[in-house]
Length: 201
Image 1 (tube, rainbow, N blue to C red):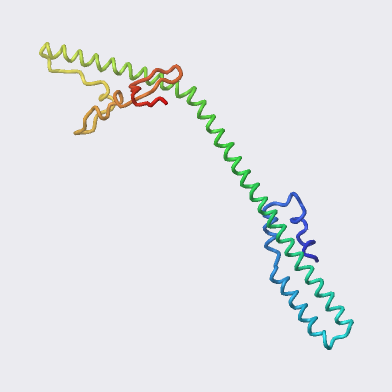
Image 2: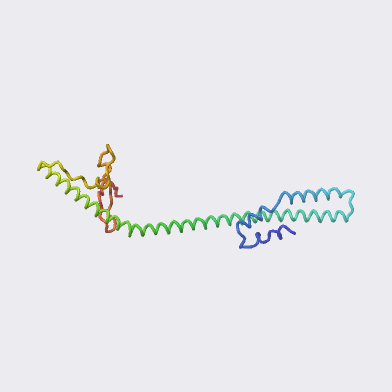
């Protein structure tokens, strides 16, 4: 069977997969085909002085077939290398496009979350922080009144009731009221937004 016939599907079919093409390329043994040419050349050379015309004709035919099969193998190898390069490029492009689609879907999903969920949650968080601010101020004012009245039983700060400060640590470092910052987005108000932190270009 001719090498072309052996790998015709991979060589000619537009539907051949990358696996098919690589398998066909791996199946082409150029060294063996070249070895057949060398053997045919030696066999012919051995007949040049003592062989009959019939034997030489047969040796010539054998050498011609061997050369043709080797050349077919080389041509098939070159063709398959081109097909494989094209298939690999197409596969890489398809993978890149698939990744782009996945990234774009996630980006759009997160955009919708920002517009709907984030804005709503920020508005709720700012409301809580505003109430915390007012509650802390009320606690401070009341404690001042108690101090003036000579009372030592003070109200505890609001935030540390929920989030106790680690021992020997400064409360301000852990204050969500002071450490939290939101810029205004959509209809959600800002909180602790220092405009000086932003460079307008």
